[in-house]
Image 1 (cartoon, rainbow, N blue to C red):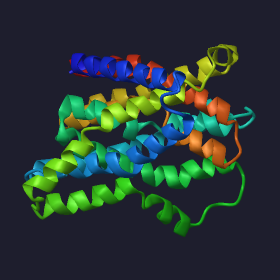
Image 2 (cartoon, rainbow, N blue to C red):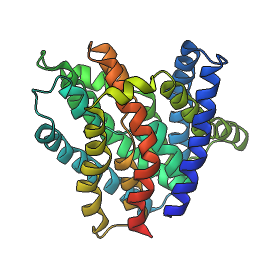
Image 3 (cartoon, helix red, strand yellow):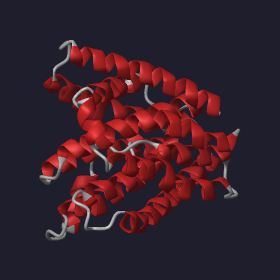
Image 4 (cartoon, one colour):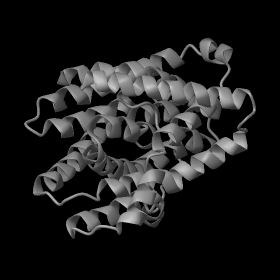
Length: 304
C-alpha cells in the first residue's frame, strides 16, 4: 500500500510541475488558476464524491462510513487543543499556524491519493471525513481566523456548511442507501468529469506554488518549525493510535492519508478574507504540499 501511495504522489508531483510551468510560461494566468479552482471546487470534486456512492449497498460499507466520520471528528477535536498548546497566542500569526495544524487538504489532495490506492470505496469513506472537516472548518476554523472578533452565528455556520461537496455526499448517501443508480450514459459522462480531479487539483497546486518566491520562503525562520509540527508531530499524535484500533484496515488507511495531507487550501482564502498574513499562509500551503510527498508514504508504512 505504501508503494502505491509513493507512486501516486510521484505522478501528482509531475502534474504539479506541469502546473508550475503553465503559470511561469503564462499559458495560464492567476485569474485562470482561480477559474480552474472554482471548476474543481464546485463541479469536479463534488462529482467525484457523488460517484463514489454509486455502488452496491453493503452494511459493512455503511458501518465503515460512520466509523470514519466519528474517528475523523474525534481526531480533529484532539488537534484543536494541541494547536493551542504548541502555538501560543503571542505569536504574530498564531491563527494561521493553529489552522495549519488542524485542517488538511483532504479535498484537493486527499481524494486523488485515496482514489488511486483504494478506489471508489476509499473515496466514499473519505467523504465522511470531509463532512467532519466541514463541520469544524466552518465553525472553529472561521472563529480561529476572526481572532477575538464576535462569534459567528449558528445560522452562518449552517449556511457555510452547505457547500457542493457536502451536498454531493448527502445526495450520494441517499442513492447508496436506497440502492439507486443513474442511467448508463449520464453516469459514464459524469464519471469522465469526475476522473479529471487529480490533474486539475495538481495543476492548481502548481499555479499556487509558482506565486511564492524561493528567497522569501528561505528567509522565513518560523516556517520550518510550523511545517515540522503540522506535517510530522501532530499527525503522528493521532495517526499512530488509530493504527492500533480494531477497525477495518481501509478505514485506517483513509484516516491516515487524510490526517497526513498538507495544509487546507482554505488557509489562503481565510487569510485574505480576514486580513491576515496571506503571504505566510501561502508559504505554509506551498511547502506543506511538497512535504506531503514524504509524510504520506512515511505514515502509510504503518500498513505494510
